[in-house]
Length: 539
Image (cartoon, rainbow, N blue to C red; front, side, top):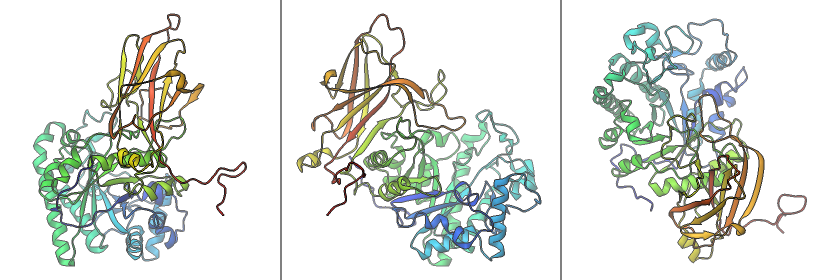
């Protein structure tokens, strides 16, 4: 059931429904053609106005090389005359032309947001590992070099030069980050600040991590004191939001004692970032909302951007409805979304309009889906809690749990629930095997299934480098679709069993299940479909 937050000990009363992140770089700075105009500088605000977004989080640059006219940090373009990178040159020109106009990206976004009732938090990336002297190296590392860095490469990051990561036992690093926070809140009067611990999550040398936890707690406490003192001077409460791992141990492994920050009142909102690359609408890790709800601190889930599916590579509205309903069920306050294609299209606007208010869309169609395990095939998975893919073995019953968060009983009682649909995707299914499928202990007759045979299926998902999935992207697939009865599905975990009673002896290939979807359907109003138009216009 849905968790009800307790009274808050937060320093701020603002509880957004939906947070949108624009890094200021990939989805703004490098998109605008020079010479940039003031309306183009305001684009991060304009593109989310009229949606459900009530907090915009704006990235401040690369790592600690910034896109605004900073007095304390290195601004893109400083100490460089010739640009080999086309994209970086464009961003430099955005900054340069804006300065000639007497403004910058951060100033225009904050002021335009305030004018239109949209709060804006600058997002400060606390770590990166750029070598001294390169384009994206900030002044602190540029001037102090190894004295403020780890000095050794961390074996947990074998593909990175982590010797240049900032050493968070060094108070010069603390002072540098606090100076930028002060600039955002004093010079720009931002509505709040986000501390992004996820951009390059490595803060201590491996052997010093456990001892560094208390120091990091003190660092966050000092930021709280700084922000509160500025708030007193300005006569307002200024919220602090921290972006961390959604998993407790993952945070502790890098020196982040998030539970203490929450209990001590050092942060007002927490974003739990999902480390996986594929959305699973049944996400079950509720450690963060459980901890935060005890003291009334809202938590927001940062979902992945991709989905393992043959129809779409990115989640559609029905999938997002299921995810937001699941998060509500587990006690999360909402979603922290971002990185949408620029400019937004119909899909993006529909999702942003809906997912901030799961209560409004609780009786709209949804797709609850299981995602496959991630990681290199044959190696230990990076997502051990996931149940798919699973091979079929003679004499063995596969058991899969599918979370459905909808309040189905009330919808049934009021006659608004349609029959749900169960879809199962098999890879290299053998039609001569003897298989029994049960859903919540009821046998689903195979002859009642609508079967689709796709002999050359390709998944629509496009992964980036280093993103591995332990499931095929091309296969011969069979889809079994069952229309369930209203009483077959329940709120909570539903049990799907696939029992392989016998296998055809001449078929020596491996059969597996790599997709399960429960589509919850309601009696939504839909205009009739015409022969040559998508919808028939009403009278």
